[in-house]
Image 1: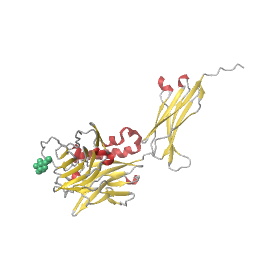
Image 2: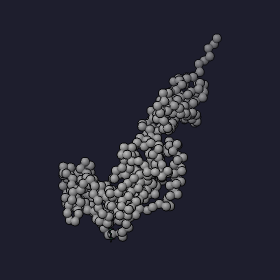
Image 3: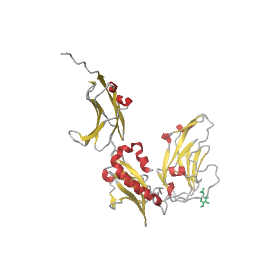
Image 4: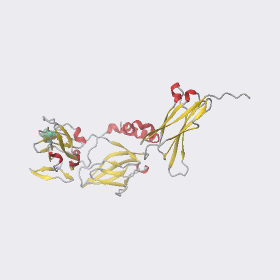
Length: 386
Ligand SMILES: *[C@@H]1O[C@H](CO)[C@@H](O)[C@H](O)[C@H]1NC(C)=O
């Protein structure tokens, strides 16, 4: 489920967004029935020894392959001619894609959707001096990155030579589908305050004109290239997410008389801290007499609206003393969009068993940190005789 994945074990920390999410969850749930299945060709299974495999690594005979020294060359086979590929190429849908990559052996990576498909449309074969990739009955959904990695082998141990890899972005212009189909009607995307957000509305043709739109109120979103930019190989990027970017957005692609909308993207703003918390712990006294009250405070100064969760470990836990804490959030003197979160552990009338180490663990979405202090408990002084 998207939301569970989204927040994982940190669910508790995003209390402020939970209400919003609950509403969205309902919405997403209702939309489930109306889910649009990707428009994919379903050819009959083909008898092939290499069905849908995405990588073929031949066992080299020589001890070490020269892949590491050689220049990688990636070519497209077009009408029996070889054409060196550039950064992007377009292949009409329905046509067969044929790529050759020099190297022995080589490994391929293809769009993940193709990796999962198992219909025998994709074949990779290792020849004496090159690897060949063939994709038949292509559709707009095959649009994406295709990479050839030359392999460096020692005996049977092979690894990819990453800096020799060649990637080509291949468009499969589909006259009916301007967007690469998605299996989800809604996609929930976290808008993290400290991280660019990508709306992956991928077009099948570089020719399409793509714009960004907000559902409520229905408006076109300005794409200025700085705050929000568009890349035909990626979609839209919101470079510095702000709360006002949140909401339901979608892309529109137009080409000729065709005008189509993409999947909807539900953007949820999450205030991400820049760093893990840096808690400071302080006990009301480092040594105290039996019967006195102990107060241990743990405080974190951080960005506003960033939730911090505190947990405690203390000596009294062993005898089952329940935690007795007070938590508070307050502004920091001097302001400047920072706040102090504090947890105070209170122990009334300390006993011998309360002597020891007090540890406070503070956690935010960026990480966890623990701090400790020790408290000594002294026996009651004998009353002095007058
Ligand atoms: C490709 O399409 C043709 C014609 O529709 C079909 O006969 C063939 O089985 C398909 N091949 C694969 C591998 O899907």
